[in-house]
Image (cartoon, rainbow, N blue to C red; front, side):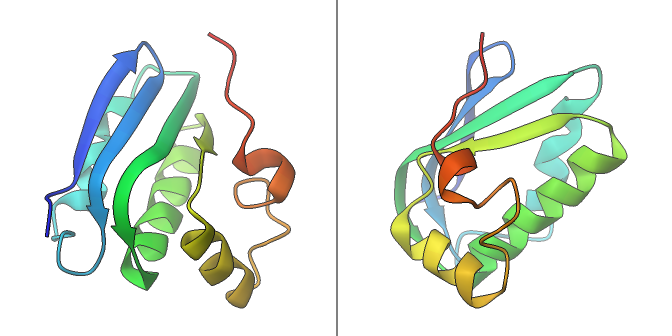
Length: 109
């Protein structure tokens, strides 16, 4: 299973590559968001994910919590259908992060 990588494409715009699954996430994964400090807005593009599961959704929720604590406006772009379905099952479909409007809207650069 491909490892999870967060790659900066431009200031505040990141590409998530690999798998967002139980097998690819470790205890340190939530800490990858330390880069939030000093940022106003961050957009994470999920278009290069090869696989995702409920552990991936849990990690995204943790990142949302961390961004709120850091007062950073976080958005996700190109959320895979599987993650959107899991978000819906979890009652998150109406949140700004997983709604059909917010899921595909990138932050301006």
